[in-house]
Amino acid sequence: MSGGGDIAAPKQHGKGKKRKKTRRLGIRIDLTPLVDVAFLLLTFFMYTTSMSRPQTMEINLPPDPKVKVEIAESNLLTLRINEKGDVFWNVALDAPQRITVDRLPAFLKEQQAGNPKLVVLLKIDRMAKYNLMVNFIDELNLAGVQRFSLAPLLDQDKQLLARVPA
Image 1 (cartoon, rainbow, N blue to C red):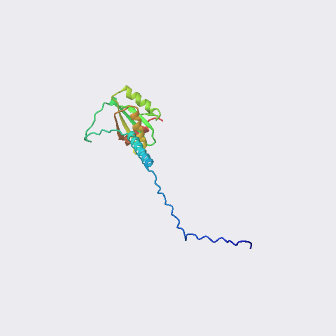
Image 2 (cartoon, rainbow, N blue to C red):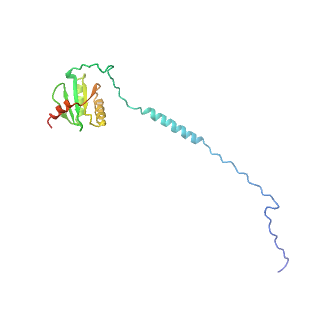
Image 3 (cartoon, rainbow, N blue to C red):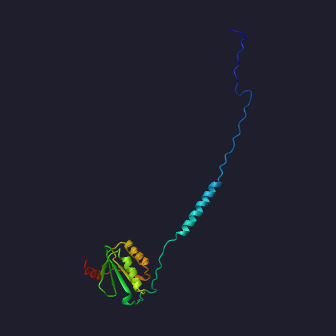
């Protein structure tokens, strides 16, 4: 071994000097934008729900079910709808005639324009689907018919419709 023999002494970790702990900084998340977004969504949903009001239809019922309402036969248009959705019409005591569903809106507008006192009696078979009745009530409203009445399709009506030529 040559020369001076300086051998480096091993380092002693942690015995002599104390190491300072670094202080952790607290992390804070700013929630202000989150609150802004929450209020923005809240106001959006409040405005959109107030603008889309449900559509309702006013139904006037007689105060007493035993009261008979008298209507002139010339003002009464009867629409009969069977279980299959076939539509038949007649005014007063005339024989029923078949009409197609796509022709019905124009026919109703024409009848309403010709007679402002028109009352439509809508007779629907009890075995028909419920949405069929709702669709026909919608057609009456779109045609501007304000006065109409609902009734079940009786056996007499079915016999009358059986005699209508195809």
